[in-house]
Length: 353
Image 1 (cartoon, rainbow, N blue to C red):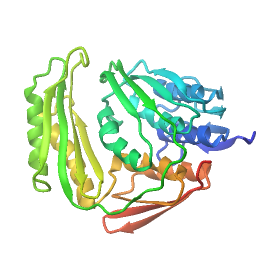
Image 2: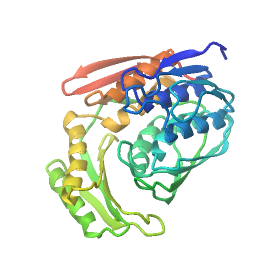
Image 3: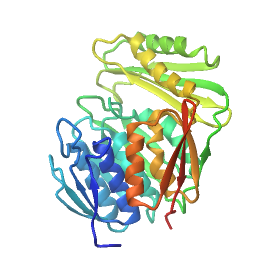
Image 4: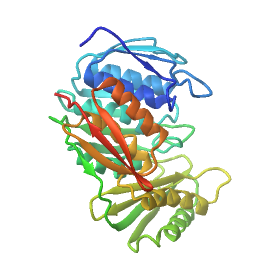
């Protein structure tokens, strides 16, 4: 491992927490010491918030890293990774900071650990500005399996904004290598399914209204639509929340998602429509991977053994940022080729050995 610190400018492109997560993940796996500067410079309140600090601490513990400058509000952090060993690790965000975002940073590292890893993560399971945990398990996990990796998941308690308090356990076995993927043939939709839920004191009828609204928007694309409607048990989800997660599958094995959480001043019908519109966008673009997963798979493409190609819709700023960081910290090179409303992301990586 080189002793020279690779400098990563956190103000580039997306300018938020994503640069931090991806840079730390690749630092751990590639054993590259890094200095992150101008952290979250693109946000109204720059610097580390609690959920970012807990992510740094989790990755530090995963590889026995040395860290300098990691404190609330800090805009510069130095990180010297050690050896990934696996084992049992825990991270607790006091607020509704996203468990899915903690997992985004930790999961690739755990796949290259020497032994099995168990993560116990506390925070928000269903929050705005981050993937719902159900999206992570039902949409992103099947995509991850195409790279030859997976994880097991146990939801103990849901946590909603603003209190958080969610708890999940994730078990991850290491891989010898990540497989390359070719996800460029979308095929035909064969089914759309999902879950429409309410929790706390909200009436279960809201789940029916969300599901019916989503179904109305989606029925022109697929006749096989099944959306479960239910109220969460109070011991699992005591606080008020409503939301819907939609999953579309194709005959070529592609998995696309759409989701929405209810918010103040919005009807249940509008919430269901928002989730459906999100899914419709990916369907109409002809994408094999939706907008929420396209940036998440960049790290796996960069770490895979062999060249990968993935068909996506509009390239998001998060994806551009992920590519920027991946090219900075690996020998990977990405190419984007426009194909009508869709784009093909091609990746030629240097595999982890």
